[in-house]
Image (cartoon, rainbow, N blue to C red; front, side, top):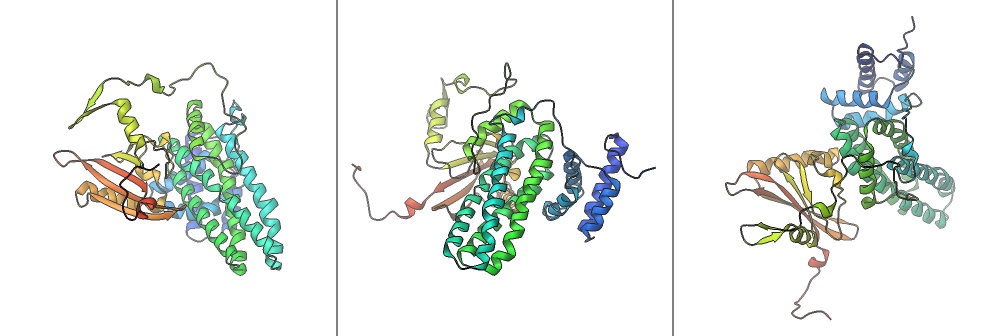
Length: 413
């Protein structure tokens, strides 16, 4: 009897056995076993795996105590082992192929990224390493400026798609993938700086692994992530994702049009703003405002405000005219820990612990970014009995404030 496990016999016993074998192989990689040996074992026991099985395996490893960073480290290796073996998930509807559908947008951006890597960056490298022609260096730097557009591609995935995955209980793959995204971002910046400094030996050492990692992420998105999403997300969720995507923007290419699915009516659609109550005052400790006045006041403030409750759930953010950091409606109802990359979670949890215990009432950070001097301050919000209600994050570009000198006592012309 063949030792190959038939993918079509996914009863509970078989599913459990497949999961155990997949985990055993990943744990062997963790223990330093030669990936070629593990790959041979995989092909001896499997004729394919589904994206769902991979996500379940990663989830199980995290539940059993393996750190997200370690799964992330192994991710590139096991992606290579599974490559070509991931089952395609065929849906009854091909709505995702429609212009403007988030899945089509992801695929179009990935195609543009592969074109940039294979037809622009790679062909320039041989001449760049062999000569000192300044124009080749300039062109390569221009290509890396374009490559940085990948930040928007990853940001949409992390801030819009991942929250929906978490609502379905899929938390391990987003954490692992976000960590790899951040490593790719950091390496793009580092390699670009090395090109600018003419550190050709270091560029040669690091650029090819970087390009391969980007290709690997494209493979994971298209062969693992997208099929997983198509298995679960509803059309209304895809509509909300498409709507929120416009706030962050697109990578290298933009949708040719707005997606409008062919259907009669929405199920559980969004509440229209005009349906929200706009009359009647909300009475405060001092004074009162209508709901409309309150919302407009908060949105007019020259700061980004985000509030999370005592259960660490994002409840509100304002819509400042010029937001400093992207926020999408899909973060509402999401835990704040899942709104940060894995390496930042410990800092977030320590801050919240200090607020909840009363050890601190506020904490500030400041950074230079995109020509701005950004001040980020967190405030513990407490009731009249000093009980913790939540945390308020206030972000502001204070560059112009820091540059103020002298006095101004009259109106500007």
